[in-house]
Length: 172
Image (cartoon, rainbow, N blue to C red; front, side, top):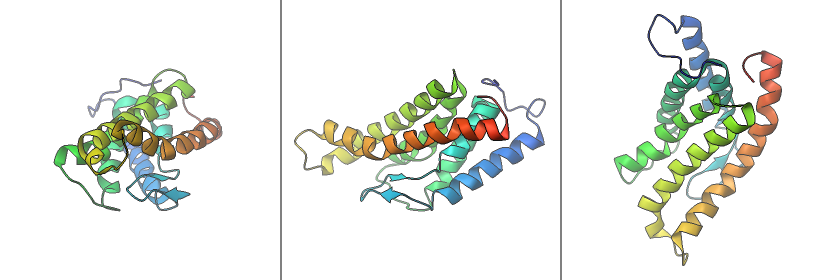
């Protein structure tokens, strides 16, 4: 597993950059096929699957920058932000956290990736969106809201990622 691959031109080949670009493009295409979408953002789709696979195959650094780039591109689909820090948390940093899937075994790595993404969306929800909640406890509201779309996504990725990695080859 290439967890700590650096981004110098000496050890990141053109082939890896093409794979990262294709993973970003595939994630963007998959983001248009939503199983369901919540009214204030968040959706269940397979957009994270290519980025998780990239993290498993190419390691943390490549997947981090691919996730960051995907987050920026993904933000144009429904561009909405209240503050630059909220934008960073909900888009580039949240998707860059999927690079955590490169660590440990595949299931632990996927869990870490989703935990990282959850913490980004949770922090954004608490700092920037909780004020709009009519719920008595905004913390519970933000947790339930984010879990309602992240848990179905993690289940899909838990099922599909190991099978796809086995089929296409790479670190499992």
